[in-house]
Image (cartoon, rainbow, N blue to C red):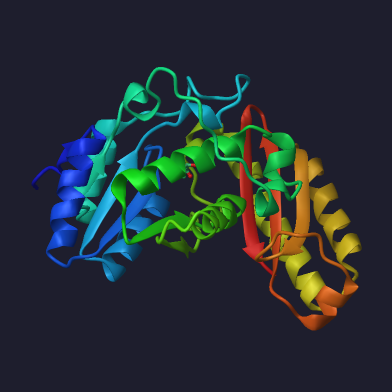
Length: 285
Ligand code: PAF
């Protein structure tokens, strides 16, 4: 099977993408940090349904990791990623170096509010979304794709990026793609490989308890009671729970009784740590 071409500079990326677009063809961008799994491949496939060419960026972005987080141990599996992308039929890999993305003297960060300040991931990882938004903004202006695809697994990130593209007039359609799950329900994540067998088994509680809480809420039970029951079960399984929260699906704002009665789209989001591994997940309610 032919290898997917790799470009490492913005200049080479723009030459390829520009040539496609000059010929009237559309380009989809799938931003990743590598360690690709079926969730990423679903993004590539969704891109192929909407554009003639799919570019996948692979860049472990240092600015979205706090000093205490797992930047150095984040999995780096470039050869395997490249093979998976060949299999999926991706057209180009953009794999820049850190100095290509952050040259000496780099001094600009995108400042965020709205869904980036919802009191979810931002409350536990305050430097995360400024780092994500800055690198995504750079990837968007470097590649200039017509569309970009992001997984719903990182639901708050998806809302942040949608706002970014809209607020900064980037003229790129941001598309969310449903979470891909293991057969037993665990959301696919590059960090799942760090779970021990016992932790992997316990990790199912997150999806199960979100489903239980969502069906109780849909059935008219008091949301806080349903969430409390789920929180207790998650903690009893051995997790340190950061949050389990019910939010407006678009703004991620806290909801009140009126929102529930109006039947507006809601999202249940969870983040919790088992052993050294922090997992996040979410579902529609
Ligand atoms: O979701 C990710 O893998 C990263 O946050 C992203 C969007 C590639 C930015 O580094």
